[in-house]
Length: 278
Image (cartoon, rainbow, N blue to C red):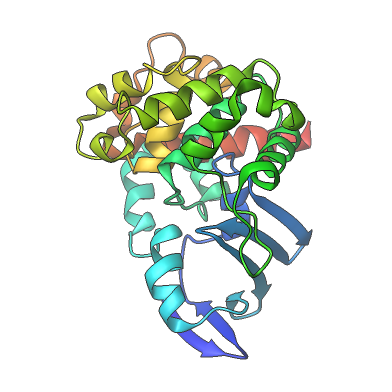
C-alpha cells in the first residue's frame, strides 16, 4: 500500500482487496451516499469523507496525513491482510466465487454505540429507509460540527428525548428499543466498553439484554462495531445462501475465526450480484 499526500488529500494506491464503494454497499454501514459511479460520500468519526476512484487507486479528498493515519487507516482496517483471510475462508466454490466478486470488502471499525442503534433500526427494514431514519435521528438529536456534519447522538440525548421525542424520525416500533438501548447503556446494564473485553458468547448475551436485540442484531453489532470477526449475522439473504448451498447442518464456526468476513462476501454476492442480475 502506498499513501501519497497530494492536491489537498490522500491518494491510496497499490492496496489489494480494498474497495470502499463495495464495502459501503454490503450492509454494514448506513451513513453514505453514492455521488457518482466513481465518487462516494461517507460520514463517520464526526467527519465527512469524500472518496473518489481514480486510475491510481482511491483519493480521500480534504484529508491530511495525520487524519488518515489516526482515523481512516483504522476505520477501513487497512493494516489487515485480507488476501490471507480470503485464502482461509474460501474453502469451497461458493465462498470462493463470492470472495472473488466482493474481495474488496473491508470490515469498517465503526463506533459500537452507533452500530447498535443503527442495527436496531435495521430490523424488518430496507436499506434506503434505514438510511433515512438514521439521517433524521442525527439531525434531530446529534451535535452539528463546524463542517456541517450531524454527529450520531449520544445515549444521553436519546434517553432524554424518550419514545415520544423520537416521533419525528418515524422509526415506528423500533423507537422503544432505541430508548431502551440508551437507558441500559447509561445505567451500566450494557457497558459498551466492557463488551470489548468479553468472550464472544458473553458479549452476545450482554447485548441481548436490550429489548428488541436478538442474535442477528447482536452479531451485527459485534462484527461491525467491536471487531468480533467470528460473529456471523444471519438475515434473509444469508438464510437464502445457507439454504441453497449448505442446508440445515451448516455451522458458521466451520469458517474459522473470520466467519463474519466470509458472511459479508456471501451477503454481497447474493444481494448485489445475483440479486441484481435477477
